[in-house]
Amino acid sequence: MEKRTKLYEGKAKILYETDDPNLLIQYFKDAATAFNALKKGTIVNKGILNNQISSFIFQLLEREGVKTHYVQTLNEREMLVKRLKIFPLEVVVRNILAGSLAKKFNLEEGRTLPFPILEFYYKDDSLGDPLIIEDHIRAFGWAAPQELEQIKQMTLKVNQILSAFLLAKGILLVDFKLEFGAHQGEILLGDEFTPDGSRLWDAQTGEKMDKDRFRRDLGKVEEAYQEVCRRITG
Ligand code: UDP
Image (tube, rainbow, N blue to C red; front, side):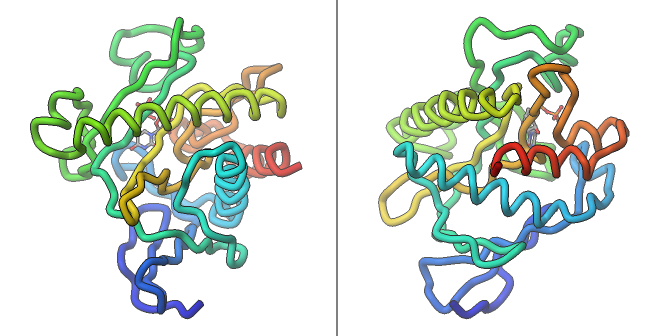
């Protein structure tokens, strides 16, 4: 597989074209940002760990019948993925109250929600990824009604699979963000699943094992990513 021109560089990843128009190479960087890139830093070897974690999770999801963009892991920092026409949506699932939802209602983090809460954000950095409702998605054509239905079903299935899998590894899946895209008429899970885009708490101690350690200057950031990788792949 030949790596060609850079297609897109984001905050934590780079996408390259390949000699196959249907396939892209996704490169994982060490760069870390938070608060819509107001806070910038580096988490040493994050790219390597996130590539490993995401590769493992996407293979697990494929085995469980969730279609993803994952094709294969190429090397330490790169995975081969199917080219997607990405829906401009960030789909967030919350199992335990934390982050922006706790802040919005001035509630303490940590209570288990009575059911998984699904939220949609419009993917636009210049707008700060605003929270949107399903009517916005339909009215502005960001996804068709049946596409949205499928995205919701896939998201809830991913939540079931990963909540159970991670709990068996001693990790609570507090919340996470997914992105989806269309490829040759199919909806596939895209982007990544990593501690950058999820909240993972140690099931015994409640200790944070995700990007909140970076966002909130809690220290031991690299160690947390390493431990997540070790538990998930071990
Ligand atoms: N999230 C993400 N990208 C974003 C916003 C949120 O990956 O642009 C993830 C975040 O890591 C967390 C979940 O989505 O696991 C819910 O995030 P929240 O709305 O609480 O926002 P935060 O306070 O993390 O900015």
